Image (cartoon, rainbow, N blue to C red; front, side, top):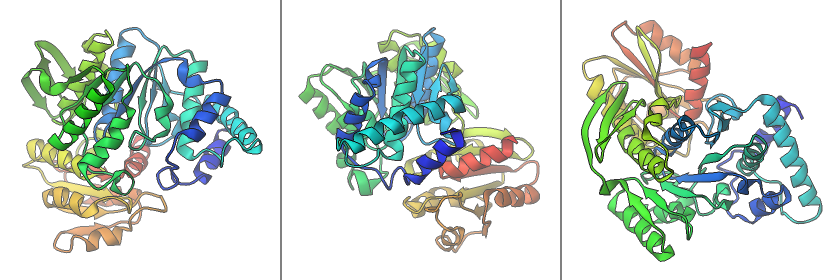
Length: 416
């Protein structure tokens, strides 16, 4: 298949969350039939609720700056599926993506015919296997691998990593991972493996107890950001600087919450014997990313309550005296009322919209959940941006947030 055909087939497999099949047997069979490409490279495995993508990007940037040929696997993508699989700091090409798809798909079909798997690998399983194949073929030395959902039964958890990293754990995907922080932490802790050291970001006490107990049960070494000195912290609108145990760290990603992610990445880089200075080269689109001025337009994929609280803190710190236009769209399975409660009071006007996905929440439903506010409705993101630009003045700021798919659509439009 060519690239458009491979993407259409992947989408036809269904939503990668809704159609997730928890369990690793199918993925193990697939990897075995592919010649176990997941064993070809050194690996850093990263789980968590918030900040895992940013932390992955920072670790990869640091390793690449140290002269290593890196791979990076993250999800979801913003615009193109190729963004999920990056080598040496760039997404793989359409041709490489399509060739890897053909290889994995044909292998899966043979396994189905032989009765060795029960159904075709899911969207996420297929792309994960494609990433392993490409990282091997393109001769990556070390790969930073982001968990898709949870950890224990996630398709990425067939690997034997050199290091495990767990970023802050909070509520998200409760219908799959459990209704308590302890249950969610138990799923994230499932990536921990005997003989593999771990790095833990600062955690809620309930999550920390679960992680530490699991690490001790496996008799593995672990290091916590909480056990290190973070001093001389300077937070600005476009990034931050701080000292970690006396070492200077520059984080180019905006938001005070990125300090924790940068500290976690710095500890991981130190464990991997890579200098932390390379962290300053990190680029991570769609997270407090500025794409226009006068009025300023900022994208941020704050798709769960913790992300919304982080964005709210950023707005209150740096945009308190400016008029805010908030463009917001969400999927139906998100804690929309809690997210609205954190963000909508900060806005002069909210423009409710929706990404082009079947499971997107209708803009009218977003408006109805916030009857006391000034909420306009736009059926598409391009219409929402047009409304905001038409009504905003040069001193205003437009924030586009909620679903990462919405942020991706907005980014594609704004970069045209």
